[in-house]
Length: 193
Figure 1 (cartoon, rainbow, N blue to C red):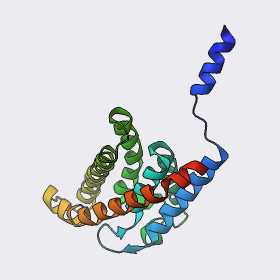
Figure 2 (figure 1 turned 90 degrees about the vertical axis):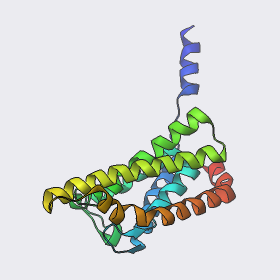
Figure 3 (figure 1 turned 180 degrees about the horizontal axis):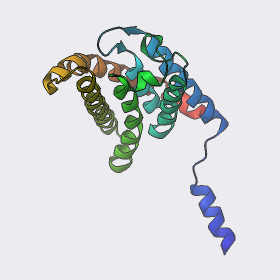
């Protein structure tokens, strides 16, 4: 009787394969490359969010989160993977670090929403948007905390006008492109992963 239980547990256990590890590493590199393509402003315009959206759509929320975690970890230890070839723990604890850390929430939110409501395209888009909103909220709260600590009081609407409003349309466009690419090529990539 015990051997049957062990077999059931083994079948239910999700394992990360060598192919998964390869795709996760490629995902971390992809985020780094996309972060280097940037326009420097208060919060740099980059393609990081595009990479995160694409990884979530191709690999699923949890594997994409592992890619993001590796990206953050590699940047924290000093490799220049952040926007403007930035690196180090100082970037993460700086004003815009909350947006980078906010990427870590996007995959689990996507996984939770698609697990609860299914994997139809509309549900996936809502899950991506929800993750993006949480990333914005976390990053904005972080930015306000650091800014007020270092510089002085600032209003929420001012910070939103600096850090969120200019990015909404570009981020939605990046999301749309990521969804289209994943629908076009996702089956091929998922069959290899």
